[in-house]
Image (cartoon, rainbow, N blue to C red; front, side, top):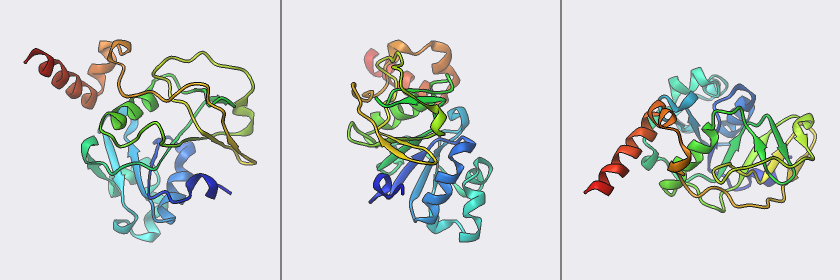
Length: 199
């Protein structure tokens, strides 16, 4: 069972994609607060508190539509500390290297919460995939790529053997100006940082 991964987890951040809906649903049922990044981070982060969601609406609240209804928009600095991060992956290997959908949102979400001290090097990251998505081969990774500690498939739970550390915040030099401008919370942070350097 997944208990080994979620033992003592009170706050979980789960990607907004539909394959992770069962994770969001199970987390709410188990009394965890669930942080859901809005798609493409357009509206920042939503916080779902199982205490404020009617039990018979947990399943709906675990959809992205329902998260907008029952979740509260929360600034990154006001989020609670995160005990576990769950991301989707197109493919993952036993070293915890993953291939995402290519938008880099899992990495940007991690960087934003890392900068505010909501996650750290020791915060476990898990990915939920089908067995066929677990590969033997190594992937080329960059400094900002998120490394996973656990792979959860329908048939097994795998503890990875990472060869590199998780990213430590935002690597501005690796972000395109287009990406920074696309994501308002990133743009605000960039402006403040630039302003602080000028003062």
